[in-house]
Each structure stands twice: as C-alpha cells, then as structure tokens.
Length: 252
Ligand SMILES: NC(=O)c1ccc[n+]([C@@H]2O[C@H](COP(=O)([O-])OP(=O)(O)OC[C@H]3O[C@@H](n4cnc5c(N)ncnc54)[C@H](OP(=O)(O)O)[C@@H]3O)[C@@H](O)[C@H]2O)c1
Image (cartoon, rainbow, N blue to C red; front, top):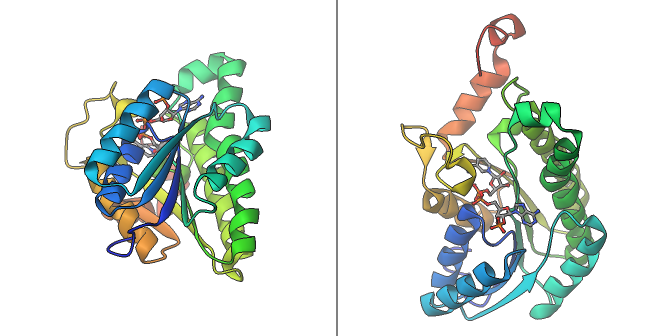
C-alpha cells in the first residue's frame, strides 16, 4: 500500500482494535478509501471523523457483532458494496481469554474459539469468493505468535490462532492462481487494550504504530507471513525448535 494506496478500497473488520486504528491512520495518510466494521457504533463513528481529518479519501462505518457467525456473509457483502469492491480486507478483531477462566467455563471457551478462529475464518472465506472472482486483492488477517506452539499459559488462544494460521495457509494455496494475496500477520507483544492488564514494558513490547507500519509494508510487498516486530521470526523459530523435554521445564 506504500505510496500506491491513494484511492485504494480497504475494509477493516474489528476497526476499533488498537492495531487496526494505527493501521487505518497510516492508510488515511495515504488517502485510501476505508470501510470500518465494528460492534461499537460510537467508537467507529469517532474513528470515521478522525480518519477523514487525516486525509482518507472516503470513510464509511458498518456495525457488526463478529460472534454472530450467521450474519457474517451479509456483513462481508455490505462491506464489499460500499465502494463497489475492495482492494484490501484486514481482519483484526480477537480476544485474549484467561486460560484458567476458560478451563472453568465452557461458554467462555466456546465464545473465545468463535471470536479467534471460527468467525475470522468465516469472514475470510466469504471474502475469498469475492476476491477470487475479481482476480486481485489482499486478505490480511491478524493471528499471533501464540499460534506457533501450544503452551500451558494460553493454549486455547494459541490453538485458535494456530488453527487460523493453518486455515490461511490453505486459503493462500487456493487463491494463488487467482493472484490474491493472503497475509498472515503474527504480532508479538503489542501495547493495546488487549494487553492492558500486563506491564507492557521491556524490549519485546511494540507500539501499535510499529506493527501498523509493518502491516502496510507487508501488504505492499505481497508477503505471505509477517512476524512483527521482525525479531519474533527468530524467537519463534527457537521456541518451535526447542525439544519437548526442555520446553516442558519452562514456565511459558
Ligand atoms: N496486543 C497484542 O499483544 C497482540 C498480540 C498478538 C496478536 N494480537 C491480535 O491482534 C488483533 C488486534 O488486537 P489488539 O491488540 O489491537 O486488541 P484490542 O485493541 O483489544 O482490540 C480487540 C478488537 O476486537 C474487538 N472485539 C472483541 N470482541 C468482539 C465481539 N464480540 N464482536 C466484535 N468485535 C469484538 C474489539 O471491539 P471493541 O472495541 O468493541 O471492544 C476490538 O476492536 C487480535 O486478533 C489479537 O488477537 C494482539
């Protein structure tokens, strides 16, 4: 999207996420046309005004509850229709459930799997048919480094994100012939509302704007998998390679 983003039609599902807001602001700077989709009408409308002031060529917002999977096909159709097609779709929503709470509450477990796997997979699938028919475009989805290896402190979240990574891998294979980019975005620790209960300090923590810059660049370069910040590619290669007996002695 760098430089060439003027006028590009971008839909952001989960537009009020910290990472999504930072990405939308960078796109507004580049005069993109943006559709914001989120459940909080007041917040998406406030963001609409902010992006217009920053230079977006056009901004519209749509309301959606992403846990209502039977509504997602219609939401995708409406997002697609705002500017008569899309060049880029970013799926950004998610939740970071507490593993001990989901261990004790099956309803919470099911809703976390829905929000972090089922729902974004459905949205990507509905988008895929449209981008495939158009013969171009980008489906970018935020997963997580947590999807790279299951660990005791958050294996429900990690499993949902890992499942989503594998879904995107298959979707990328399918859409390759149509020339559609499928980007799997794997952030490490990012200072947003999602991690506000943590200390958010230290060299491993990144700002949403750093991650947003990496996302915009990875879309422009038609990358398949983005670790952001980039050092997470090395960290996760080590984490994945750790022999199980050693891994089991860690408290990760
Ligand atoms: N922060 C990190 O360290 C980190 C690391 C790796 C991956 N990620 C991933 O990055 C993505 C963005 O997260 P973030 O850090 O930017 O978090 P965030 O600021 O907390 O944003 C979470 C987003 O999900 C939306 N959401 C949650 N439940 C929803 C529901 N039932 N229906 C509709 N929307 C719902 C929130 O909407 P509301 O504004 O209405 O609450 C918000 O837009 C997520 O997929 C997350 O898993 C984050």
